[in-house]
Length: 248
Image (cartoon, rainbow, N blue to C red; front, side, top):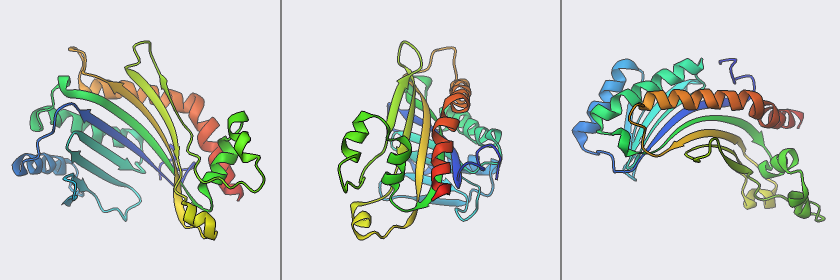
């Protein structure tokens, strides 16, 4: 696995999401032609299926440590790369998708509701996710007001924060910790090994400027994401959670 993030977590993923204002094409020929063009570049993406909600998916075999996937939803196009060997490997896939969508899916730069660049980290943990997350990130009077209650057991603690990266608030960054422990598991003391996830997303809202392309905007989002991750998120969020899990 890449040493970029692979030494910090059990799995990581680099995703791109393009949310559109108008509904995307869903015709058989259009969808298949788009995925066939993607498959020419990535022949191992041979698993195609449709979900009950109408989403179209093309992906590699999920039993591989490293795998790719792309989906077309009613108003969103997603491209994901799990445990890529390098950031460039994931970006090449996302760039290909963004190069194809204007011509093959009729997605105009005006049609952009939001463009996301997201890095995610998964930590396998068998235990109360909310408890360990609250121990790592639950400092301060807001959390201690309830945590200090005798015999209190955390049932839902998923810290999240969104910030504006410039004055217009059209470019934002969001940090979210997602847990997967249920009240039933806490009540029985029977926990499954499931992932605790950290998601860091940099998002650009609105139609693109006339002089910009989707690819250019995504590169800007990646650069901003890399800088914030390096300077703030990795050492203050990702490593502390990984160390707390390792210590259990």
